[in-house]
Amino acid sequence: MRVTAIHVRNVPEPVVTALRERAMRHGHSMQQEIRQILQEAATAPPPREALEPVPLTTVRTTATSTWRREEIYDDAGR
Image (cartoon, rainbow, N blue to C red; front, side, top):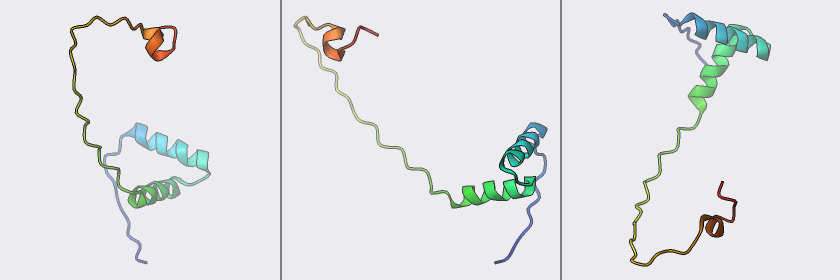
Protein backbone atom coordinates (compact mmCIF):
# COMPACT_ATOMS: atom_id res chain seq x y z
CA MET A 1 0.00 0.00 0.00
CA ARG A 2 1.39 3.36 -1.01
CA VAL A 3 1.28 6.09 1.64
CA THR A 4 0.85 9.70 0.58
CA ALA A 5 1.14 12.91 2.56
CA ILE A 6 -1.57 15.56 2.45
CA HIS A 7 -0.99 19.17 3.41
CA VAL A 8 -4.08 21.21 4.28
CA ARG A 9 -3.77 24.99 4.38
CA ASN A 10 -5.88 27.70 5.97
CA VAL A 11 -7.48 25.53 8.62
CA PRO A 12 -9.23 27.87 11.08
CA GLU A 13 -7.71 27.86 14.57
CA PRO A 14 -10.97 26.72 16.25
CA VAL A 15 -10.97 23.63 14.00
CA VAL A 16 -7.36 22.84 14.90
CA THR A 17 -8.17 23.28 18.59
CA ALA A 18 -11.22 21.00 18.31
CA LEU A 19 -9.16 18.35 16.50
CA ARG A 20 -6.43 18.54 19.14
CA GLU A 21 -8.99 18.15 21.95
CA ARG A 22 -10.73 15.29 20.15
CA ALA A 23 -7.39 13.50 19.68
CA MET A 24 -6.59 13.91 23.38
CA ARG A 25 -10.00 12.48 24.34
CA HIS A 26 -9.33 9.43 22.18
CA GLY A 27 -5.72 9.05 23.36
CA HIS A 28 -4.33 9.70 19.87
CA SER A 29 -1.91 12.14 18.38
CA MET A 30 -3.58 14.76 16.23
CA GLN A 31 -2.11 13.06 13.13
CA GLN A 32 -3.62 9.70 14.14
CA GLU A 33 -6.98 11.32 14.82
CA ILE A 34 -7.04 13.08 11.44
CA ARG A 35 -6.06 9.84 9.66
CA GLN A 36 -8.89 8.02 11.43
CA ILE A 37 -11.42 10.74 10.52
CA LEU A 38 -10.30 10.62 6.88
CA GLN A 39 -10.45 6.80 6.82
CA GLU A 40 -13.99 6.78 8.24
CA ALA A 41 -15.14 9.48 5.81
CA ALA A 42 -13.59 7.69 2.83
CA THR A 43 -15.13 4.31 3.67
CA ALA A 44 -18.56 5.49 4.85
CA PRO A 45 -21.45 4.34 2.68
CA PRO A 46 -22.94 7.05 0.51
CA PRO A 47 -25.96 8.81 2.02
CA ARG A 48 -29.35 7.45 1.07
CA GLU A 49 -31.10 9.35 -1.64
CA ALA A 50 -34.06 11.36 -0.45
CA LEU A 51 -37.39 9.66 -0.88
CA GLU A 52 -39.81 11.06 -3.37
CA PRO A 53 -42.39 13.34 -1.76
CA VAL A 54 -45.79 11.77 -1.17
CA PRO A 55 -48.56 13.71 -2.90
CA LEU A 56 -51.35 14.63 -0.50
CA THR A 57 -54.92 15.33 -1.42
CA THR A 58 -57.13 17.71 0.50
CA VAL A 59 -60.81 16.91 0.55
CA ARG A 60 -63.46 19.47 1.40
CA THR A 61 -66.78 18.39 2.78
CA THR A 62 -69.98 20.27 3.33
CA ALA A 63 -70.70 18.62 6.67
CA THR A 64 -69.47 20.07 9.94
CA SER A 65 -67.25 17.76 11.91
CA THR A 66 -68.18 16.86 15.45
CA TRP A 67 -64.81 15.28 16.20
CA ARG A 68 -62.58 16.85 18.83
CA ARG A 69 -58.79 16.66 18.89
CA GLU A 70 -58.84 14.57 22.08
CA GLU A 71 -61.04 11.96 20.38
CA ILE A 72 -58.78 11.70 17.36
CA TYR A 73 -55.37 11.74 19.07
CA ASP A 74 -56.34 10.35 22.47
CA ASP A 75 -54.48 13.09 24.30
CA ALA A 76 -55.24 16.11 26.40
CA GLY A 77 -54.78 18.54 23.50
CA ARG A 78 -51.03 18.89 23.99
